[in-house]
Image (cartoon, rainbow, N blue to C red; front, side, top):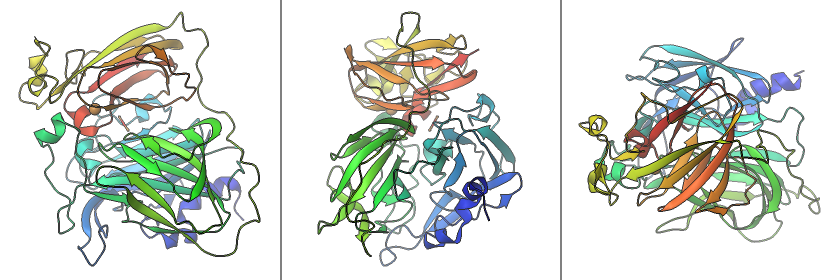
Length: 467
Ligand code: C2O
Ligand code: CU
């Protein structure tokens, strides 16, 4: 007999998951925890009558990598082996983690060399939906498939849904034969909206068919794992409530409009499979769309005659003091990109730091400097509240991500947002100024960057220190 704790650890290897071969774990369960191996593999992504399997790079050779599950307050231990021919690392996105486990080469660890390994061992303090992904050459490694879902279960089981369903959405740039278009590093992508794909998968599959039952209530965990695509996702034919954003519970609201997810953002939804004739699908609204990217096949007997009242998640995670008058402030000016000055090297008549720009393909900058690892944006004393003003003076939206902390967006263009959500990633649109606030209570060196991975690689990267 399993106790709950063993069940969660071993859960990923349960025979049940054999139904989803792409998620069946090759990860060896050891006494120390799990092993994840970054390695090449192949996967049938395009329909098999159209193209052969796609050569990918994946954890355990699959895309996405195995769904990892742990419990809030428990330690997760993962040995990451590098079976690639280039260095790699793993970042546990959204976890308020020990800094040494954050997975940022050059800031928190040395990259894992080909053939090498690194033991990640950390406590996940807050329940919720997270993900893990490569953080070295992530613009290439993430685009080739090195990412997966990381689910932190509530320590007190939450019983508001019949089932938990992880849907990791990704877009790929594929050639006609099904291989990954290897035009990485194209200046056109880097200085514009990033590498956008031409093919969308859900859990690594093209339009998967997911069996559901009438009147079933499902907790759907949506993850945008794309390099750069902002996704507008709808669930027609269902009734939907919002449970959480970026892992953190939000007050329960019925929300039947499509949700927006910037790259790296997540949302947990409570989804009622209505017992009626309307087709139930996951739909991506985007140029040339909408596209049905997953199908819910309603089969079997109704789970119940009618739905009980929906219940939200218990509050968890970090919070913010009401009084921000003592907050320490920092400013971040985002510049560059196409139409934001010639190739980003000039902005409003001012040269950016050409020392770091020259020869490195930098086209964006924060406070006039491209990816300066030498000097932090700010230093905060542990426990201090930080307010960072972010001014997007580029012609592009950006998905701003803070490592190791969740923040609240206080204002947009000077207007209070009234938003209570604590997020780890937020979108800023062109000519927008936002203020974000968080309690800097996690010691260490933390990145703050755009999660459009081509943008961070070409300059939109800085860090702050909490000590
Ligand atoms: Cu998910 Cu620094 O990133
Ligand atoms: Cu960006």
